[in-house]
Image (cartoon, rainbow, N blue to C red; front, side):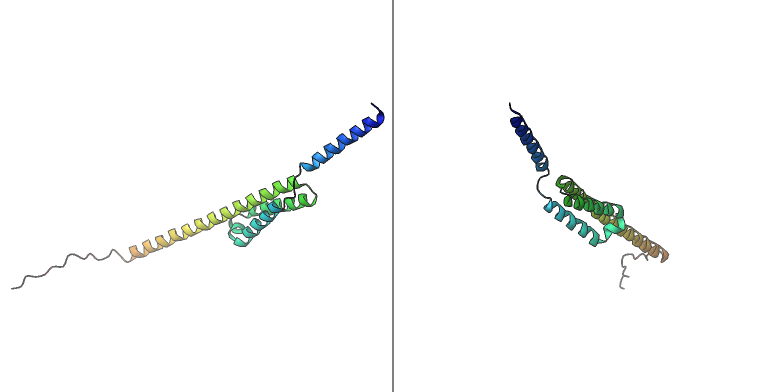
Amino acid sequence: MSLRTIIFCTTGALLCAAASGCATEGPKPNDELTKAHTVVEQADKGGTAQRYAAADLQRAHDELSEADRFNSQGKYTEARAHAQRAEVDADVAVARGSSGEQQRAAEDVTKANEALRQESNRNGPPPVVGPATTSPQQ
């Protein structure tokens, strides 16, 4: 083999390896990023996630920022993974927010029931009404 053939083959092999390394990134994660942005925005707008699951919502924002950063660097695999994690974190925040809101509503109902119970006990027991009796006619 000549030196020229060896250089040509080596260069070809390196180009193939470099191309396959880039090919593993796959397509841009546009759909994943769009969905993650939408889910995080919805979690922000709901209000309950911020009130009851602020840490989860913050984690979703952090993951989304990382996804955007990796996407701009052309690291699509990492961007896709961070976008998916951001979406999951936002979903968790919304679920915990809903759970917190439902728990608060249940506590309100329990307090209202207790107030009614105390009010009814304060007024004393209800009068006992027996069956109507009629006096015999004479």
